[in-house]
Image (tube, rainbow, N blue to C red):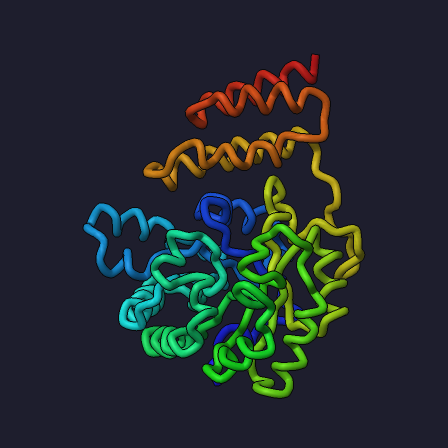
Length: 335
């Protein structure tokens, strides 16, 4: 059983979710910086098309490779891919190994229709035999690197009792379970009691595989409580990271004899917003600046003048404009 770096980490694991156009190279770099020294146990890249890496023209492939840049500070880091073609999954996993990633993850939970049309993402749940082929192909390309899977309870209904044993039989290192079905998207509360059931199934079928839960986690204290209640090996945090690169060290609990950071000033948040925007512009020049703006609502809220400042930031088109507006706001605060 190859669990690679996972066996070197203290449990429980608290990891950063892969979120398209959110946990990109610029944001991960910030999270690594501001959530240290505690930080996430593991980071994931955004999902990348294995087919695109194999078949896209050079310009398109370059853009996909930009989603796979990372720094040493982000380790351990896992590259996430999607495809329904075993041969391209094997190539993508081999590429990730060459690029120096610590592991490979297979997206079997994304509900995006364009991805499902390719029989990938959540569509994999409907074809367990193919799902297992994809896992085996990833292992062939990854060689010594561990392969993991991120998925859901089921497609149109909860199929955990049938679906999870199929995945366990392919012996991945880790299975992350988003505790909703594909049909439910994020429209209902995550059912963490099913994560507990997943742990029971794992214990009976294949105790060597780690199980992590995902869905609706608000902060690190919440993550710890859910892990303790379910017996999971860890938890994956997603939406709570918006506007909060301090998330993984944002707790009032005493840990290692010191009080962890629990409050961030408005000025510090705004200066990090500017830093984030500058990194985004530097590292991802091929992406629309509008994608960066989805973070502004999270960074800019809960203080006097937030709505007006946010409106100004949403009208910008460059990091330079953003920096100017923020400086003007902060100058006014000191007068």
